[in-house]
Length: 193
Image (tube, rainbow, N blue to C red):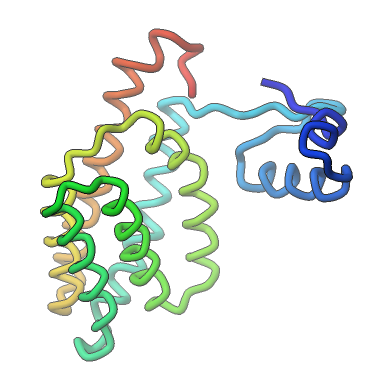
């Protein structure tokens, strides 16, 4: 799909300057590519997904280990966020669970005080999360069990166990996304989303 600044400007009834700025931000995030005077929406291939998750695992595990080493007394808000996901999972509310899941991960990331890693994570996540909300049917009970495990290790101050559990969680998520891509999306597309 190709976009143009002028057509977006007309459609959104905005000047081209904020449109151009937004398009450049999306380009930096890896979601668009400039092609002359047009902008191409980029898809994700299986190889892209593999590379994205390799980076995600590496950077987020650094944060997971660092936060697990913090004193228990500094992790009260992480416990509160986990309780919110638990409550949403118990009620079966997937939308609310995803909201609280984001809050939980954001809370863990903030505890690292590593602004560069956090910025990298958000840029990296922007490339695959748009797919998650369109296609992946979340196994809520399984996801909650995984969160209980890795967050439990973070709260208990067990960085190696937290890292191992978090890696398993992220690999499971990647495998679920790959499965859906292969079964439901790629047969009807150009092998990318």
